Image (cartoon, rainbow, N blue to C red):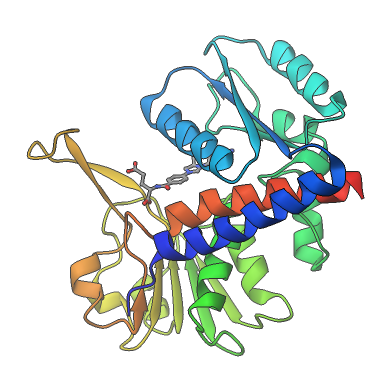
Length: 289
Ligand SMILES: Nc1nc(=O)c2c([nH]1)NC[C@@H]1CN(c3ccc(C(=O)N[C@@H](CCC(=O)O)C(=O)O)cc3)C=[N+]21
C-alpha cells in the first residue's frame, strides 16, 4: 500500500479551511502567520513559497518577511519581539537553517511559545515529552496523522526511528511513545552499531537520516510500514530543473517488502505543510479563547 501524503494532506487542509471559516465568523478576523526567512537559499525560498501558498488557500493570512542573510542576531531578536507583541499575529515560523552567525537556539527561545507553530521552543518540547497538549513539530505530527488515517496499528508496535534531530527524530520518538499511540520506540543514529539488525525489527520504520536512499531492502522487515522523511536533491540533467527528489529510502526495492510506504515526493513533505496550517489555526484558537 502506498501512503499518499498528497491526498491525506488535502484532507487535513480541507478540515483546516473549515476551521478557519468558523474562526473568522466567531472572531471577525482570520488566523495570521508570519514566516521569517534570512538570505536567498533557493531550496528555502521554494519551501517558504509553498507554505505561503498553502496558507492562503485555507484562508490564513500569511506573509513572508524576507531579510538579508547578514541580518544581525540582535536585529532578528528585535523583529521577533515585535511579532511576539503584535496582538493579531498568531503564528511565527523562522525558516531553518539560519546563517552561521546566528545562534539558532537563542532565536527559538525568543519566540512566544504560544506562537511557535513549529513546536521547537523548549517549553513546547517539554510539554510534548510530558504528553501535554501543545503545538507539535509539523513533520512528526504529520507522520502521526498519516499513520492514523491509514489505519496503521501502533499499539505495542516496535517503531524504529533512524535519526535523532531536534526537528524530526526526537519529537517523533516522543509522539510514538505517547499514550494513544503506545509504540515501543527505538531511536538509532549515525553511531548505532548493527543498525540493519535493529531496523529489521521494526514494525514501523521512520527514516530521517538525510542521506539519499540510505535504507535498503535488506534493512526492512517483510510487512513493515516505512515512513520516508528524506528530501534529497540528486542531480538529474534529464529533468528541467536539473535534479530529482529522492528520499532516505531506496523506494523501488523497499516497496516490494513493505506493507505500506510513503513516497518522495508526495509523502511526508505535503503533510509537514498541512500540519503547519493546522498549528496556525490551533494557535489562533488558543490565543483568542
Ligand atoms: N522552521 C522550519 N520549519 C520547517 O518545517 C522547515 C524548515 N524550517 N526548514 C526546511 C524544512 C523542510 N521542509 C519541507 C516542507 C515541505 C516539503 C514538501 O512539501 N516537499 C514536496 C516536494 C517539493 C519539491 O518539489 O521540491 C514533497 O515532498 O512532495 C519539503 C520540505 C520544512 N522545513
